[in-house]
Image 1 (tube, helix red, strand yellow):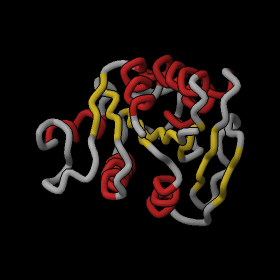
Image 2 (cartoon, rainbow, N blue to C red; image 1 turned 180 degrees about the vertical axis):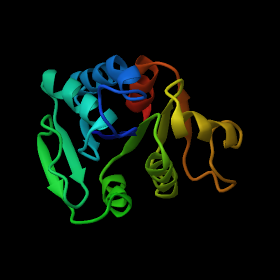
Image 3 (tube, one colour; image 1 turned 30 degrees about the horizontal axis):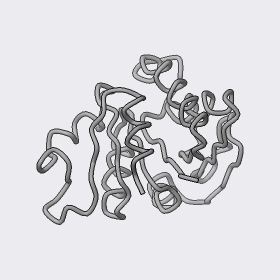
Length: 171
């Protein structure tokens, strides 16, 4: 069973940029659950909450890896309290996933994209969602690597269906 990490914008789900991605996030969560993937995320608000909501409504399992002092969103199946700040918590999150899907995001998302790559975890950039997901695509070597070592591929997709296909093709 593949463990799919979803990273991206945090923040209120009723305000941009998160509200602009509401339907996309709900649908991604639903599709991941329907395909039998276990979803891992940071367990908080924003993209994490919306993807969790979509997955739970479809009967999926969502594991939230929480930073210190966070209770987690109400759609998590399992909440793991790390006692760590958000950046350090991210490395625990990354160690527990097989592939990462990135949606928008600020500096925390950029750190997670780079961390996943360094750990050899394939990264899927859901393009057109803004933030570091779109910015980091501009520096890819050969359109799919973050450095000359070519540790793992960074996939660029424009639809949820493409993301699901890439996940399904990964070992």
